[in-house]
Length: 354
Image (spheres, rainbow, N blue to C red):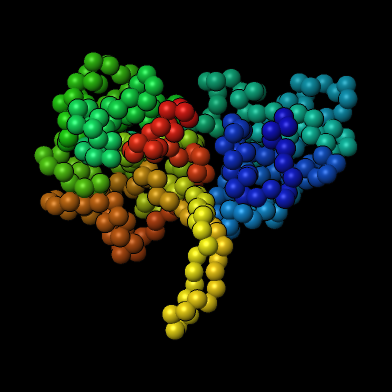
């Protein structure tokens, strides 16, 4: 309960960390007397970042000051309160409701999962879109292991990277996976043949390396609507249904998942004037960036713009989408929600975080 309560002076970065730590994806904003003054969701944080807010800004002004809630008096029938909360959740399409006492303090909270049996959780539809995993690269950053094994099969604990990726999509209801393969493709195919997975799995063979998006051309006409595309060396801890809903709601041709990264230069940086002498020194400046993680949602109609020959990268596809007058969305996640397993330094961190 305490982990969900924060005050309005915490920063956006701190809020993202707290939201990552809770399965509810909602924080309760309280004042000095622990009275409920608002709620903050991961969607509120995304909108703040996309509107230009810095990660070190306070969440003041970014949260809902008239939150959905129910009031519970001492001795009141808890089942009746829960039924009231469920009605509010259905009407407002939210998944968590704070319960406050008559003074306005949060006494507990109820969630959609608490109140609705598993088969009836229609607020959480399965992820009914194809998932394409780009698994054809050489994995040079993970040499010498990738001299023997293809990068998707490098183990993290008791299973390979690619299974960690697939498992997260399966948890969201995904059932249709397409793997683009080239380097050591027979080893990858043999691995999955031996696994006999419960989900549907097919392979897209590249006769030669075609870049980070070139092989997607083989899907044109075979998939429709939205398609998830992800690199085979990144793991995203987020609600993939929210990413898909964001993509569809805004009508983007492409949506990329961007990690909100904070970087501090550990030195004073020199600013020169026009004559080349020192104008000022910025001591340990820090910067916020949205970094492309390598996960995307694409509209299948955009696959037809990919040329039949030559290397073609995702950056080329994004450029062509923008030239065509379509929009490219960005779905922000926290730095801790992105695990890059494609280089040894990050691989070591991944073994600690998975």
